[in-house]
Image (cartoon, rainbow, N blue to C red; front, top):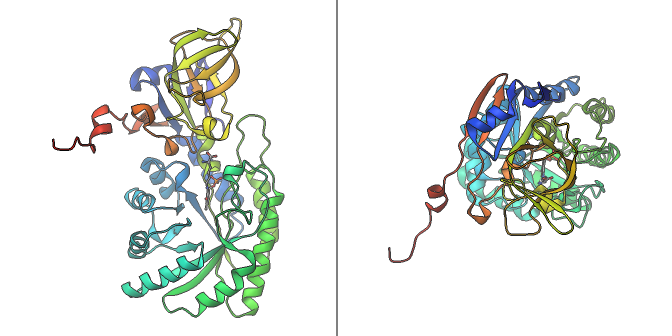
Length: 415
Ligand code: LLP
């Protein structure tokens, strides 16, 4: 579902004109379409409806509590990686018994909080973590449900920074060691084996790496069963890509079909951890052109958002479509779209052909995932507000930060 449309020459998100949104909330600001969020979530659960499954939304993609609340109401579970994400899910009304806890560096206090909340499963990523959890759960007189995140050594064919399933990556336990660790865990008193898990990377645009990883996981599932260690769920992680530009990511139905075929006849519950697929194309970052500057070699459109608001272009050289809010007839010019931050790496888009004037609004598209959640206060820039659009209504779901909040935790010694 594409929630963006030009109406009377002005770009709208659902029924909200982005011009009026900018007038009401200022720029830069993030806007998300509720209808698009609901539609992507439903398309995911429908694609897997033929078997028992649980979608555990990867909170890191966009952790605004209004979005978590929306998914919780749709029945979603959650994939968390920190105490902060746990607290957010609980505050948003998420069901703790549908939470899986991933990440290579879980602290003791994080384990305690998750055990107290009664989460579904810890996705264990190392032997030391297993031992720590056994101890922590023992002290609390609890039993921690676990799965091992197995590193299947599969090339996800994505950006190296977001590829996680190769043996040189820090994630998961080595494939060859999985049987030994499962056997060890099966003898522990305070952990109980629930499942098996893998996540090979993000923004995957092909199905075969997912299938290859699942085949390797299923091989282990069979071996575990032979050793008398059955697992009750199989977690295939997240990673399904979206279209930013001209990528051709698999349709969710084809992705589901490929996985479901491999799982046929198996009794385990299927867990999924999609992040980007659910939120990426539901959101945009609205920004205003402050200045046009005609350099010796390039034209620059200097906008009021920057790498601190949307880090993906600077960090991964990621492409985000940039659209003018008014449908224009004039002669387009090629611009570098850059922010005000003092770094050459502060760009939102290279070589974009636009009809642009100072004061015009631009929409940076596909910014719903890893946009706000990766933002920072670099250059002492307050974070942008977030707005959830529902039909013709705008809900301010995070206010714009102000400068006193930015300095509130700081102190001059002696004062
Ligand atoms: N499960 C685990 C264990 C993960 O580490 C991740 C993402 C996901 C699920 C969700 O993956 P997704 O469905 O969103 O691809 N900041 C990067 C992406 C980092 C992804 C990290 N892990 C970006 O902006 O592209």
